[in-house]
Image (cartoon, rainbow, N blue to C red):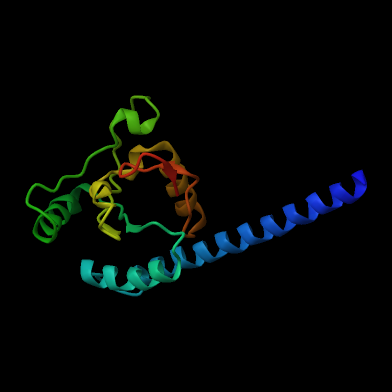
Length: 168
């Protein structure tokens, strides 16, 4: 009886693991498709991003949001700020996560800016707009891995500024 129960538990564990791996692979495909949108265009507008991601989000209800977070150099900052102030709101700013969003650890100002500039759906996610993800250690690790591998990367679970729980 113990052997039978052990075999049954292992079987169900393998089924669950296979389902999780399949879902993660599909999520990676979605992330890759968003990356391809930007690779294939000189400039993607906020509306184009919204239209593209709406279909991805409707087909994948377990994905709570998709964002575009460009690396911004000092020479590009003024242009991006002007664009975002026109597209979103006049008081748009780029900010580092609050120390409480980083697990209570104070972080030094990062020299690299990688802000959330487009995010969909906007409803429920607008708080993330302008957040410099390079200042968050988990996100920064994903950024470094993406840079080093040339692949789009899904982060480990993170605490989102727009929610009270951990999501990814």
